[in-house]
Image (cartoon, rainbow, N blue to C red; front, side, top):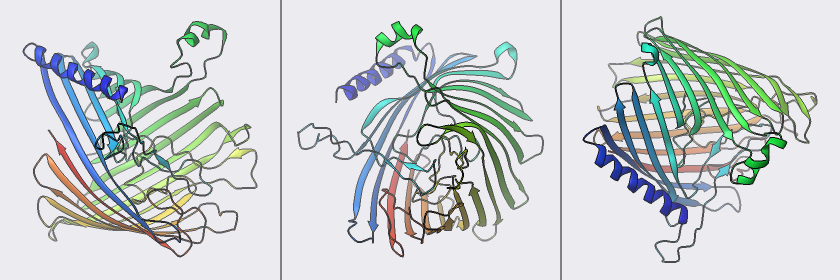
Length: 437
């Protein structure tokens, strides 16, 4: 509660300061309120239905300091209704911890934040544009980073807390070419203990950093080629994971396509503390065709796969590492599948009956890339039916029903990370309202 008060006071000071300087600096105030009700019914014996209502509130200030400098600050509060005991007067924090779901055999599965009570600075950065009068910018501070389909780097906006990076990013952008160079500190080994800073000269720094270069070639109209090289480095575990990839994305008439391939190398650590080589790769291909005369009907198909560990291999890690993705919209809505030790196929369709309403459906079939301990690889299937309605330009609603069916392989779970037994199903329903201002 003390942290919430501090951040709330900070937010008040930010907005008060913004109003004072609004006459001399171009300042825009904004925010967001997002409420989502969720319900999960798991037909596995002993698994009870669960539901919750979660809310995310954001307040932001966007200030244009001068023609080449701007600053952005965003405060975010995320919580489940009733999680802090405020309504009953108890005031006891009853935090609903986040749930991490892991498919058997994977090392980088999707993570779904059910909800953690949290009030914090979501973003706080300064951006310098037109450096040396060139199309060059520098963004410094806490920020959201998202590239491509967000399979490896994303803001994870589905989560109630989402994701930010403490980063420095140099950006070069023209009509035909763009490139970002970034350095991000994922974990500082000596935070929350000032004595460590005084004595750190005699000890090794054991930080976790994420460094990358991401380039986009835009020479062909309506088509792009993305090239990237990333390093995820953990000094404590001596992990130095290198990821190289290419992504093709574009449209030709009424057809659209995306294809992405990533290759990983470097060093990683197996359970038990042994450092071994990383040798993994992943592929994602999807395409669709839009029938404009039939309410904009788009029919699509997708295939995704990523390598997994062979139990007989002890001198290397072959499970593709999913890094910092936004997995929720990519492999089905249950979020128990990540881009690691998996193969997934999807057929999907969507249409717009009106200008403000979109309706879609997906069918997914999953399997393990490497079979589990029982020589099984079937991970079952998922059906998603969803609708998105824009009530106004700033008010949007989303409704979805999801059915997850378990396969013969172990590890299938529902949205809240509870196991779904073989031949059983779990249903997930949510209604979300988002108001931006």
